Image 1 (spheres, rainbow, N blue to C red):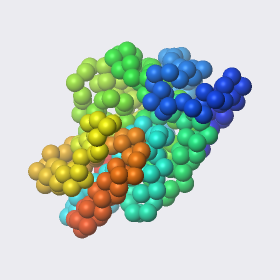
Image 2: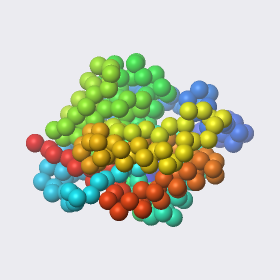
Image 3: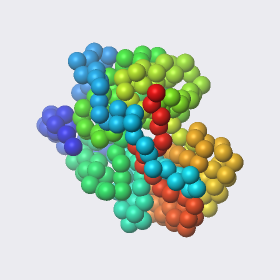
Length: 290
């Protein structure tokens, strides 16, 4: 993993205030923290526009081994490294199931968070993928998606910082798919155009079929058995982007305490006990390139 950008950045900030970084609430990443390059410029990385890449074209002639008698579940976690990363990593390692984490580059602004990211990379069961560097310029979604060059620049910036081993991207705040010949849009035209632009530049945009979210920070997660039932129902009723394949979206900070983390473990165990279901990572999702 390349962390040169973050190392330079942190060395500058430490001279200003070590106390600020040590005491910063993680929720302030998008509200109070002021990185040197807070706003992604459309001029950033223009010399690095993606050319033909083996990480993309490997899918053109690839025959993926899919057992048509099985169903596939893709555990995906957005917004790491964050305050739930350590528990997620531990559970995935202990349960030995495949999962994909979509990481935000600007989140890794302390040594501790950088270590969480390294732990993800060192975990053989986890695939690390791109969730943009700035998380849509810190949640300025309309402005962000109305500028496709900005989106591409942000994705490339994250790619350059962490050298991801795949071309899979999840867009912040938008459920969009661009997988070869198959695509699906969210409600707004901006994310549609931006996703097309990413696809033209050889990125796969990876959406989701089912979301497990936390309604309130003051409340515990929904019972994992309800989420498991929802997974099975959607698979059996063909309510997914691709039949027999279900992508579940979760967010890193959902699992920042022991009780909620154990709900994740319980869900994984229920899925493992269903011998008809196989865990997979995003880069093994079936793709057809014309």
